[in-house]
Length: 305
Image (cartoon, rainbow, N blue to C red; front, side, top):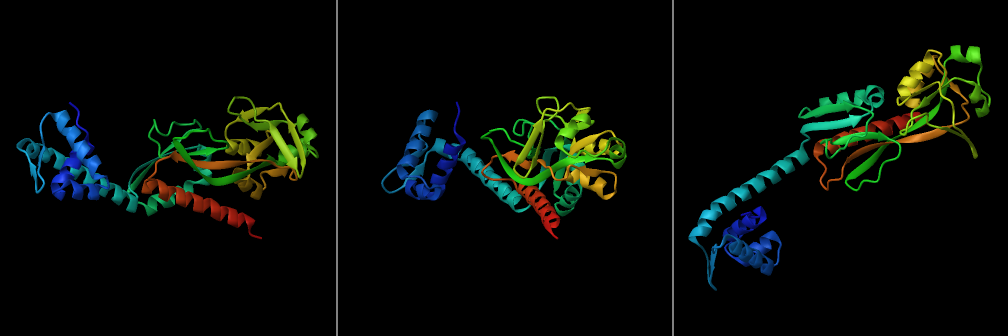
């Protein structure tokens, strides 16, 4: 026989309040609903729990025995509420995050270190994988994903960054092969392309103002890592499509130069995806807020004259 914990909780509230009316007010339910649920509980158990009179509410012998169990339900419910309130106030527990290794190694390593220092009660677990994890089934709190998101009502997302992409090559490569002057010139170069989700190189779509150029290119190398493409380009292997986040450190050191700088590749939006719960755990909210602040400050710094 199954008994609903909520019905036991309601029974305990009635005994505590001393009447159906007072209990109904406390639990914010109509008195008729409270009375009906207790009657259904008695019918399911096959015994009366309460003796009702016009002047007084009496607990039966069986009801007194059941009340001990009902009060344990109340205690557990109150303890769960207190735990939830505490966790909302102070981030704690294990925080599981899935993100591309490129992002972790360069874009977020310093921020993650600051997060660990600021929230000592949170243990961070990072899964550095390009695969699209199942957040709910695999019990992840956050996944960092780039580009378009699937339509999934069980998930929510917060935009955390927009990465600008361009074409880059090493000075030793351009010294031998020359600098392209128009996108059509790319067809005679060695190209290092991002790997599409369906396999094969991601087509390059270049824009200059209102002018748009797109080709399916023959790639010498494809990889699902813009950081790796930038590093391979540094060795003189070809012209790479990479984001400014990974290419700019090499540009500043003179190891890469921008190719066709007046032409832009489409930007990629970075999303923090998380289970769409009504109440977000404090640990998740704290991490998202810190990550968003980090990328906002980078955008402000980049925009400064």
